[in-house]
Image 1 (cartoon, helix red, strand yellow):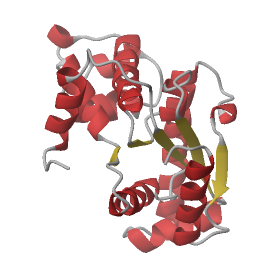
Image 2: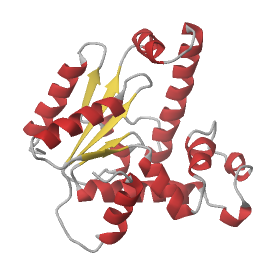
Image 3: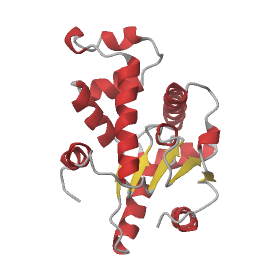
Image 4: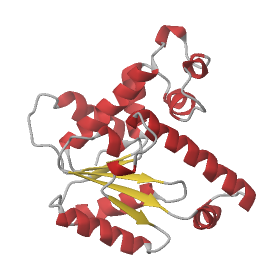
Length: 224
């Protein structure tokens, strides 16, 4: 895997757009705050590579590539739009130059376009970014949702962050709200659980057990 993942995504996106191939295989991981999907994606990728399978995972790199295409600052794209408190464009206009004004639909379409392209290229784990929703209709994928009780997530996240228990809870609730809003924005409705093939309660399994469940399911679905 190249060190510059953004350059790698650019090469995949711009360098091979005209190559026709069957979609996938790909995996999307959605998670509640405190269920560490990025760490899981990293470990699964390492296991697959040891088996001679050339997989990689993407997370915030999708936003970086989207910001590049839209000529927006990536931090503003994430914090002023994707993590905004509402759908109102007034919130983002304050942070962006009018020269680069983009509609919320244009931003969502750009992000979805990059995610769908990655899914079609295959051998990729897409973490977050409403991946299960934006890849609807693209075969060769497995869509997993990671959940856990609030108290368990407070305990787990409290081990990784210098927050008091009260601050951790507030952080989780706010980020859950933002992520749910993102899923609603991309799905166009409040009910989005039907987009997932498998939901795993991470409080009931060890990290290695969860990885085994995901890999076994990928084998069952003939993705690997």
